[in-house]
Structure formats: structure tokens, C-alpha cells
Amino acid sequence: MAIRYESGSTYFPGYETTESVVEYLSPEEVARRTLNRRREISLLEVPSVMHMASILAERTRKPDFWVRSAVTTLDRFSREVCDGDLDAALKAGQADPLTAELLNQKYLQLHQDLTSVQLASLIFGPKLWWTFNGVSVPWAKQFSTQPRSHIANSTKGDFDPVVRSIMLSLIGTGLTFEEMENIKVKDSGSLDVAGNLVENLLSDPLVLQVPTEEGPRITFLGEEAREALSHQLLLRNPKSDDPLFAAAADFERFKQHADTRGRAIIETVNNVNVVLCKTVGDFFLQWGIPGSKFYTENGLTPPEYFGTGS
Image (cartoon, rainbow, N blue to C red; front, top):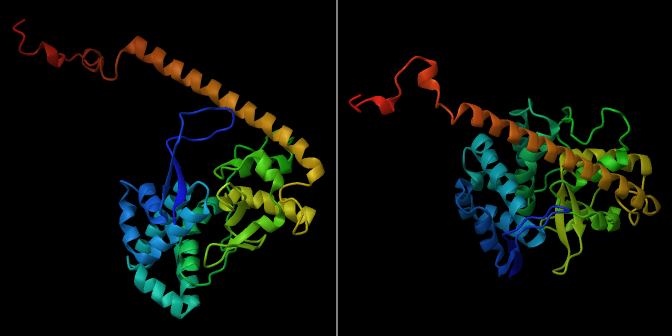
């Protein structure tokens, strides 16, 4: 089976980049391309890992990020709690799913000093790997730590929580406002052994499915976005066919608010970047290249004067 693979360009609302290159490759080749020149590419020699990566390559619209995230966190899981032997761990988990859950818990307990956002990232690969290889593990939050504050919070207290959840859900998912508006509750959940969506609002990670020209494709909501959305869903209590992010009658208003805030953030960050670059440039114009005044400031003879005969 050949799948569409796009490379050479990135997308960000309001900006154009160079044209991308579209190829049709096997899922295995997409996985290898994604991990090219990375140490973790050796894990693809393990059949169960290649199987996981191939499913992600087939099912995700932008596989590069998700394949890398899954394989690299699985690599850490392998080294920290599986003694580097994923085959043995998988065999034990297939014989007794409780073993898989205990290994997951051990992995998380090693990192209890991290935030919930970081822990969700760490357990991402192992959850997918167990599931796609026939081991049933909970797709639910398995830790309790304080979430990290996000830039989308407002110190003025005037940031609408629905707008915040929409803005957070744009980060890393590749979703557009139009796609978010059309996603229904039944389009979110966890994945089964074949990578198919199973409706489950309590899933962590939360999978979102969107239609594309190549068929339905999935993406994963970031942990902070998932927590923000979960809070809103508890308040709304929507049905399976209802919109996921906001009621249809209200989404346009929330979208306009989120778009305005997003552009303001981009402008602010751009201005900060300009000031920082100018400040650094002015500094080096005055002081010269790094280290150029080290010898004179310390009363030493610069190296270029040695051996000149003067």
C-alpha cells in the first residue's frame, strides 16, 4: 500500500513557504524517512516497533512528528524499564496485560517530578506500541500532577476558556479552524489494535479524526489542550453527533476571538524578536566579535603580534 507523503514545507496560518514535494511511499519507507539520521531508527528493526510506526504513517495526516514522538519515547521506555529488550516485554505483556500496565506505571513513577504535559508525552509511544501489538492498556490519564501554565492564559482574566481550548488545540495538530468546526464528538477517542478510532471522550491521548482526500486521517490533541477541552465538555455534556469544540451557533464567534488573539501573539513575538536581534547586533558592532577584546582588556599581547619581529 502506497501512502501520500509530503515533505519540504511547513504550514503556519498566514505564512507561505516553499512548495512541498509529494511522493507515494510504503508505510515502512515513510517511517524510515521520518527517523533518517536519528539514533532511534535502529528500533525499526524490531518488528513490533515498525508495525506501530507503519500504522501511524498510514493513519496520520502528517506522520513525521507522530512517528518520531512515538518511537523516541518508546526508545526511552525500552531503556528505562525493559532492559532494552522490547521483544521480551511484549511477550510478557501479551501473556498478561497487567504486566504491561505495571511497566507503564513504573515508567511514569521514574518521572514524577515532571508536569502532566511532559508525562503525557513520555507515555505516548508505549501506549501506542502496546495497543497496536494486541495488548490492552488503559487509554486514560494515569498520573496526577499540576499542568504547566501556558502562554494562552491571560493575566487579566479576560480570556474565554473556550477560546483558550481552541487555540491550544491548533498547536501541533495541523488542524484548521474549518476542520475544528466540523469535528463531532464521535470523531474523537482512542485507537484499537488496527489504528481505527474508538469513540471515547476520556481517552488520553485524545485522538481526533478528520476527512481528507486520501480518506479519514487522525491527529492527537496535546495534553494541555485535552485538559482544557475536557473541562468544557463536562460543562456542555454534548451528544455523539454534536460539535466537539463548541456549539455550532457559537463557533464563529469563538473563532474570531481566537484568530484575533493568535495574530496579536504572533505580532508581539515578532516585535520581541526584532528588538532582541537589534540589541545583539548593536552590542557586537560596539564590542566586536566575541573574544576580540579579551587580550587588550586583560593587558595581554594578542596572538597575532607574536613572531612578527616588531
